[in-house]
Length: 112
Image 1: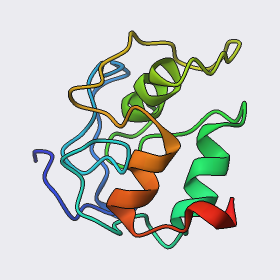
Image 2: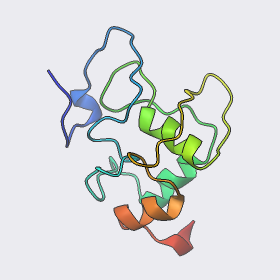
Image 3: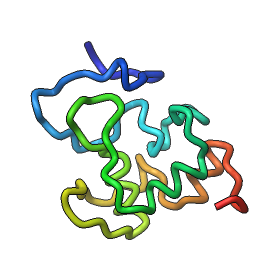
Image 4: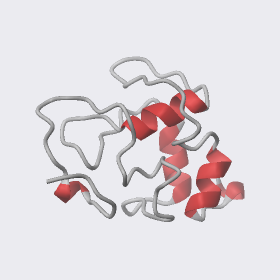
């Protein structure tokens, strides 16, 4: 089984406890994400989640944190303490601001 777009958490795969370091093909935080593919959440809810201290699980890989979320948080200088995953900035693959994310996913900038 491999990762692909349009995966739901029901389709998640096991990586034997390994933490991935790059966004999945289906990660909402990735620039390659399908617009609006947010698992039932609104874009505004996702932005609020991204700017919180909540640990976010990956919806594609079981028992793993969302690498895209960790990179987004680095891109926007959001400091989260452990147990949150920390990864380096990557504005080529992952959105660099909440406005880029909202614009891509059809969110409302005025509704944050």
